Image 1 (cartoon, rainbow, N blue to C red):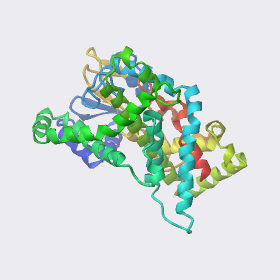
Image 2 (cartoon, rainbow, N blue to C red):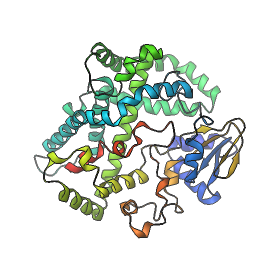
Image 3 (cartoon, one colour):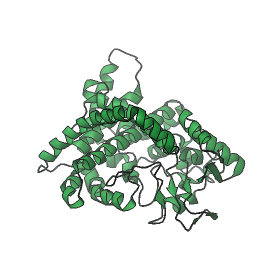
Image 4 (tube, rainbow, N blue to C red):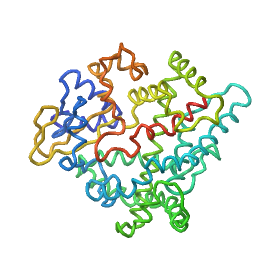
Length: 409
C-alpha cells in the first residue's frame, strides 16, 4: 500500500480498508502508511493533533467538496461561514423546539411497527424502518416537508436515488486519486451523470422553494437562519440547496446507521438488554414521560449507545486532513508538509491497547465497571473533534433520535 495508491483504492472498493488498516497498526504500530503521502494514526492524542487545530490542517481536496460555499467545502473560510450561519439551528434552544417535530415521526414509526405486528410474530427489516424515520425527520427539519416514507411504509424514490448517488460519489472520490482515469470516465459518462444529478435535485429544490416562500412563518428547523442570511453570504439557490441536501443525507444516514448497530448489539446480548430493560421500566411509568431530557439521565442507556458507536461507528473511515507546508508534530512524530493524515475510527476503536476485548459488546466499560478501568474512553470520538466536528456532537444531540425509540421497544 505504501508504494502505490492502487492497493488502497482496491481495499476501499471491496470494503476491507478499515480491517486492513487495523492489521497494519497491529504489525507496525500507531503510525502506518496507507498510501503514498498518506498516514493513519491509532492514538487518542491524534484527535487533538490532527483535528483540533484552528488553522494549520486543511481538508484533503480528494475527499471533500470543491464547491465554494458548502458545509463540506475544502475551503475552510467559506465552509466555516456556512457553519456559523447554520449553528443556531443546532443550539440547545432549537433542539428543545424541534423535539415535538421529531417525536411526531418517532410516534408514527412506532405505530406503523405495531400495525405490522398485529397478526402475531413477524419479521421486520429495522434498517429500512430507521431509514424511513431518519429521512422523514431530517427532510422536515431541512426542507420543511417530509418524504412520507413512514406514512407510505416504503422508501421515497429520492431516498433510493440518494443511496445510488452515494455509491457513485464514493467511486468518484476514489477516482480523485487517479485524475487521468477520472477525466477519461467523465468523457464517457459525464453527460448522463449530470442529467441524473439534475433530476435528483428537483425534489429538494421544490421543497426548499416552498420553505423560502413561507419563510415569514417562524419554525424550529435547521436551515431557517441560512435562508435568512443567504443574501448577506452571497449564497445562490444551488448553494442553499446543496447545504440542505447534505444536512438531510448526513443526518439521516448516520442516525439510521447508529440505530441499526445499537439494535443489533442489544438483541444479540441478552444480559445488556435485560439490564437496560430494568433501567427503563424503573424510570418511567408510561410512554408520555419519555422525552429527550428525561432519557438523558439513563446512564446505562447512554453506555449502550456509546458502546454501539464504538463497535459500529456511522463514520468508520478516517476524515483526511493535510499537514501545513512546514510540517507538523503528531503524537510525537514529525510529519512532512502536504501529507494526508487521518484517524480511521473503526481501526482505532478495535485496538486491544485501548479497549479490553474490543470486538465484543461491553457497555459496562462506559458505566464505570472496574474491569475496564484501563480502557481509554476518550478515544471514542464518533463525531470528530475541533472546529469542524459534526454539529450533533454534544451529549444531548448524539442520541436525540435514538433514546425515545429504544425507550418504546
